[in-house]
Each structure stands twice: as structure tokens, then as C-alpha cells.
Image 1 (cartoon, rainbow, N blue to C red):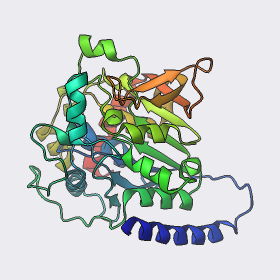
Image 2: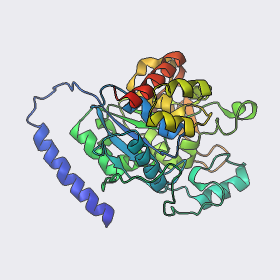
Image 3: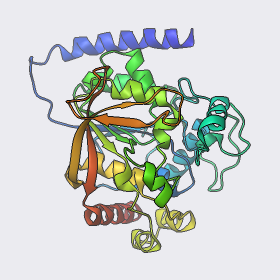
Image 4: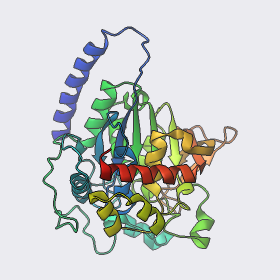
Length: 362
């Protein structure tokens, strides 16, 4: 009933928007782009929270519409709390929306994951379900970095996403750096959602990473964002987004180092103190995804392939598969730009500049 009422309200809002947009000339080209960032903002510190820096560390952030939050590396309510606290620390205006989203995957669950492991091998990182976690989301406990008093949006992520793309048709880039549950819900609630976006940039789809699990890192080359909610990933990759960009294994060699941390904390301030205190030497997965969403020219090489997600409950459940035109199965897969090379030096330089700008408020 709650979802039905929300959707009824959404339809009324979309009807009003259609009346407003109908006064503009047919075929008028949009002139401005916008960005929404959907992520599992686990914290404190680490790639999830640091991915905010390339977006909010710019001189002009007027194109940024807000954050939507999903379960993944941590529980959704904890992610909302960690993100909100970082925004407080960074002195970001409370008017910037933080919109709560899915607290569970569409189908997958902790008991299902544990059952899958019995037959197919251990999943090295289980995110919110690691250790002795409960099956369902518990209340938020005390945060290491302190509590936030920031007001959280009363809207839900999928409805926020839908509302924004209807308000700004063909102008909104959706950046998804966690599991794709919120995106899939928006697609299923509104059949026009994907086509009304400008593009989707997502962190995931580590194709051909099996041997790297042996030779480099089983954790870093496990496609967590897709495996956590495979059904949502499949729904998303089959939706008619005008463009989809996948940032997968290309991010793994670009790792947060003490030197990058120290350069990013060159200007004294609250963000510098946060980066120093919660430093993690891990790949800059989500930071790179955010940077590419803002500036696709960071991509130096890519391959366009048809892509979908394996939903059979075997060892490849949740992994992306890519095909050329000649062999694709024609069951809903769509072309995806798979990033294979980036300008690492320019990306790191941009991250450092953005972090220092957040301290100086320049």
C-alpha cells in the first residue's frame, strides 16, 4: 500500500511536469547536464566516502542534484549516517538531498548468499552481511566520526531518481557506485526512466577477472556490486539508457597511497583531518567512477560490448558477461562502454585538487 500511494503521488507530479515542459518548443536541445550519485556510502573514510570529493570539491557544483543511498558495503541506514556526517564535517549545505533507498536486494539475501557459498566457494567480501551480521537491517549504532544532525529526505531513492529525470529529461547522468538496486527499482516503477536519463555510469562489471582473483586479489577482482544484487544488475543492463559506461577492473591498480593522502590533505582543515584519520590503502574504485562521470575524457581506451549478468545459481551468479555482436544471444543485452584505460595521473591530480579545495572552500 505504501509503494502504491507513493507511485500515485509520483504520477500526479509527472503529469504536472508534462504540462510544464509542453510549453517549450518541440525538439529544443537541453543545454545543461546534471548528476545524481547513488552509492553504498560505507564509512568512515575509504573509497565510498572519498568518492564525494571529486563531485563536491569543484568550483561549481550547481549541476549536482543529490545523493541516493543503497545497501551494499554496509547497511543502508549506516551509509546514510556516514555520508551525512562527512557532509557535516565538510561544511556542505544541509539543503543538498541525502535520499534513503533500498535496505535489501531485490531477491538475494544473507541466507541465500550463505547457501550459495556452500556449493560455489567463499565470497571474500560480503558487505553488510559480513561476519555475524543479522539477516535484516539493524538500528544504527554510534559512529566513530560522531553523529550527524542533518535532516534526511523523506523521499525514497527510486522515486527521487524518477522525479529528477522527468524534471530534467535527457540531462541527468546517474552515477551508481554500489549495488544497482535503487536503479532497478526506478526502472521497474517507471518504464520511461532509463530512456529519460542522459547516461548511466556504474562501478562494476569485472569481466575476465577470474585469473586475477588467483594472482592478485580475490577481493578486488570479485564483482561485489553486481553479485550483491544480480537481478538488479541484470534489470539495469537491459534497460534503454542512451549510454552505459562500466568502470570495473581498470580501477584496481589505482590505489590510495600515503603520498596521495598527504597531497590531498595539504590544505589544513576538517576534510584533511578526516582523510588522515580514516586512511585506507585500497583501490580508488568509487573516486574514479565519480571522476569519469564528471569528465569522460579521462578514459584513454575502452571496448564496446553487449553485456548482461549471469542469473544462474552457479559459480558465476552475479558476474557480468560480454559478447560481440556476432555471438550475443539477443535476450535483452545492450551495448556497454567498458573502460579499459584511464589517465591515472590526471585523475589523481584532480582528486588532490578537489580535496584541497574542500578545505579552502575556494
